[in-house]
Image (cartoon, rainbow, N blue to C red; front, side, top):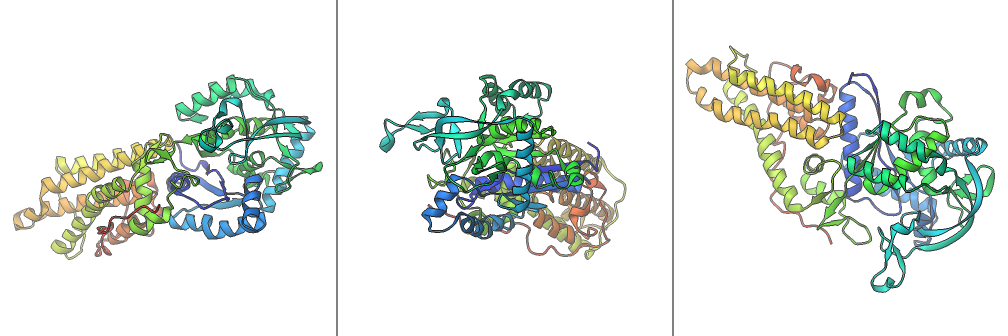
Length: 524
C-alpha cells in the first residue's frame, strides 16, 4: 500500500436517545486507531463520526422527558456524545449531526435524484415495526414473547412487542438491486468483512429483497420528502446518507471525489443496513459503493451483549477515571480479536494493565532511561560493534513495523498490536540476557554497555512510534524523554525504526502506567 492514498473511515452515527456506553467507545477507538495509523503513514486521511437525531424513538423519548426532539438532541450531543470523544482521546476530522443543514440539504438532493430517475414510487404498506430498531421486521426477526409479553410477537433484539403499522408510503426499488448486490459480494469478497458477516449478508439477499418503505407520515420529526411535505424520510434511509453528505455530496464535488469511498466500521447488528440497503442506494444514485463494510463483534458483559435497557451498559468514564484513556484504548484493541465478540471484565482489564502496560512496556521504558541517566548522565551512548543479539533486535524492529502495517491494512488491529508486542518482549528478553547493570561494573565492558543501552533506546523509540496511534499520551511522554524530534505522531510510521532524535535522554515524567492500588467496582 503506497503512501499518499486517500483513506476515509467512518463510524456509524449513534442514536442520541441515551448516553454512550463502552460498546460505542469500542467502535470509536477502532476507527481512531486506524485513522491515526494512516495519517502517520502519510495517507490523505479523514475520520468521520457523529449522531443520528431523527426518528420516532427520539421523538418519543423527548416527549417523555417534556422537551422537544431538537432540544433533547442538542443537550445529549453537548453533554454526552462530544465529551465521549475527549474521554477516549478521539482525533476525528469531522462530526456530523443529522439535524445539520448540510445533511438535510444533501438528503433532499439525493432523494430527488432517485425520484427523478424512477427508483422511488408510492404504495401501501403494512408491517411489523420495532420502534427500538426503527425498522420494519421480517417474520424471521420476531420471536415469541415471554413474561409480560407472553402470547405476543417481540423483536429478537429488544425483546419488546412490535407494532403493526399500515401506511401509504414512498418505496425505494431495492428489489431491482438483488443480483447486482450478489455480484458485488462475489466479485469483491473484501466488500463485507469479516467472513461470518459476509455469509450472513449473502444468505439474507439470496432469500429475496423486497422494496423498502422509505417514508413515514404518522409523525413529523425528520427530513421532509422534497416533493411531498406530508412525509418524512425513514430514519435509516437518511441516516446512511451522512457518510456522503458530510463530504460534500451534491454541493462540493471536489471534496466528495477526494474522499469517497469510505471504509465503514459498524457493529455486526447493523451490518445488514450498511451492506445491503446502503450499496443499493449508492448504485441507484450512480455512485461508487463503500470501499469496505466491516461488522465488528459485540462487547459482552457477563456473557450478554451490553444493553441500556438491561442495565449492562458501562460508561467509558468508569474505566478511564481509574485506568486512563491509553489503557482503555490498548485493552479493547488488544484483548479482543477485531471482528469477533469479546468479553469485558474488570479483572481481565486490571490483569492486562499490570502485566502488559505497567510491567511489560512501562517498566522497560523506565529501566532503560534510568540506566542511561545513571551510567551516562543522560547522554545517549554510541554503539560499538553489533553482536548477533543487537542485530536481532533491529530485525524484530523492522519485522514488527512491516507486519503491523499489513495487519492495519487488513483491519486486524489486534494482530498489529501482537506484532508490535513482539518487540516489547524481545527488548525485555534482551535486557535480561545482556545484564547492563553487570556490564556497568567494569571499564572493560563499558563499550558493550553503551552498545546495549543504545540498542535498547533505539527499540524504545521504534515502539513509541508504532504504538502512538493506540496509546498517544504515553508514547508522547516516552518520545520526549528519549529526545525524539518534534511530536511522535509526525514520524512516518512505516519508517519507525529509522527515527531520529537528540543526543540526550531526560528523566521520564513519572511512570508511563502507574500502579493502580484500588480495584474499580462496576456501577450497577
